Length: 349
Ligand SMILES: C[S@@+](CC[C@H](N)C(=O)[O-])C[C@H]1O[C@@H](n2cnc3c(N)ncnc32)[C@H](O)[C@@H]1O
Image (cartoon, rainbow, N blue to C red):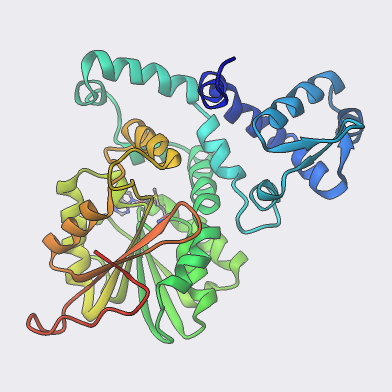
């Protein structure tokens, strides 16, 4: 018999689009609000084909997203509930949509990379953010993905960051504000500036209004490769380093260092590879997707700390969330001879 892990690898092709379909067609919402329900009841409530609904839900059972009782009624397993409940900050549907959209084209391009190399293939393509922001629909889809990928875990990261009661947070590449909003909700005396490319502005405005923080966040349009970041007490870089090779990361981090107040901190928030780079699975998969969607990659703690130190930050510590995105903190020294003290509970790096 084929071991379960190998079976999952072989049939994994199906799981993301199925998850996207059952979410987009409200089957998961229907089960969360009214379940447990048999497939026919789900289909009747949503006006969908019952046989197809049943086959899709059975796949979700096999992948461990749903449970099916003896009477054939489906419900979500407990760990999946917050991730697919649209009312929950941890809702991941926008990110699943991003993964599912264009998956076939991505796999085709990986084959091209294998044959001709990434640099040669990408030479005839637009830059990553010209592609993400090519039109309204694509920009909206990317912004939704960022919010759903980052806002839930950002509420935890905001606590782990020991945010000050007052001061200015500059969220560089902050998108529609998944971290900035969480930080402002957590620290009512804090203000924030989101620095990002011009197409992001209306999305940040909308999300900040919805999150109730619009009066404390400003948007500054700019390019962190060619313009100085606005000065701040904390400079946040969430899923920015993983978009770029080391040389560009250093450029951004040096910009962050100049913008950071003396004694202030940079907050790098990223997925982390295990030290031996054998996992975790989500980091390995996203590392492959970074190759396709960006020019970056995922890194180990040691690799991030080396970049932070090269940019001038010291006393680097790591704080791990219960999710996929973790915090690497670097301090801008007050005095080179007197590095700031490290708080207990930190993983020294
Ligand atoms: C992967 S998203 C991360 C969004 C958000 N910080 C998060 O943690 O979910 C990277 C962000 O960097 C922004 N970005 C890319 N190139 C940039 C540049 N040259 N200058 C400023 N922002 C840039 C993108 O617009 C996008 O919002």
